[in-house]
Length: 543
Image 1 (cartoon, rainbow, N blue to C red):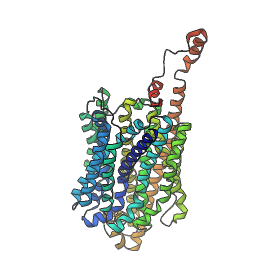
Image 2 (cartoon, rainbow, N blue to C red):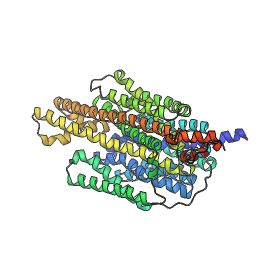
Image 3 (tube, rainbow, N blue to C red):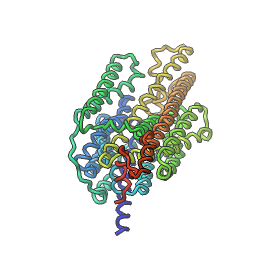
Image 4 (cartoon, one colour):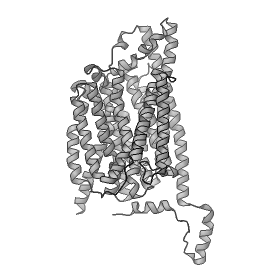
């Protein structure tokens, strides 16, 4: 009986890990396929941007609603439905003959991922009920999720080079089909609970996020004072403010803002957002620098990321053990610091850098990123009641995805603005009209993504000016991300440290009084029990 139970747990963990791996992989694997997509489907840069960003935006907009749907209709049912949609979207994307069909298929993938990922973490919590085994399972699950983010370029480059761009979508289909069959057999059936779906919150948050991200992405090219950019940005902010106001009034909101009042939860959720903010930027900029400036092939750039992948594989399970023994604060803060150091270190190397010179930064970033994934999940699940697991899991995934979306948008805007400024000055010295800056500035992206051959056709002095401005922009973006992560490490250390002290001594002023009452035969009972401890107790009890 025990062996059968262990086997079922192992298969459940395998199913959840594979599904999360595919969902995370799709965030990055498509980037390496963009050159061939642009050539085969005759897509411009804006079309390629939608191929890359359509998935993330839809996912981020829907994942909180996906958590609510899982609570209402059953987490296992929504997980299976999400995996089926993701697999179907992958098949349509592989068969797409136009850029419009491909973008639509990417959005279907985003819908599927938004339905399956919230249930993944909460299902882990129901399969592995002991605190120690849960921490180990989350460690493996988080490591596999992080691996999906880092291994995308490694496997995507050779696949695109030898099998064509559609192969990065076809690979999902047989794995997804097997996952759907296995999930239906081995995942536990969790009874649904009556819950109101917050359609108003969904509409406000989706529209607000979409408009704000559009403004951030288009601001650098259209101009930050453009009517369209200012209008979309302002409307997006107002809609998100209205969303927060609505959530505060609802009895069953889509986003439980009360989670952020807990210092430990707030610190963990902030860490989830900021790790993705900084590291998604690095995963986006590094291939551009390798391919667009250093002249690496897609396969070479993918293989160049192997050290980061190796560190993610090592750090994921290790962070689970550290979190189980010392609590989530130590590995989370250490991981944030290492990510900040790695990003800052990478900004020290330019267009003549040798791979072995900046190799240490890849090891540092990979190990730091791997250290953060598990503690964030552990910190959140330790501090919420079982009934809130679905929402807490969805909130983690939302903030991670939004961190990546905003990281690429904000740091990309920093890069583009700095590059345009430097390139304008350099081209002026070469006697080239400022009106040509926009088209020339697309050269690194064209070289990296295969959207054109402008990078090859440029005269040598102009190409040198483009490369220099591009590297300067990357340096500023990396340093901005490094500073943001360093500040986040300090904030997380303070918030989680304060939460730990309050958990052990929720009311220091009444501590002496409680001790005195205990000595007087009052049983040591406190009139002000720690509600958080009460919530955690069911989590620690074995099944």
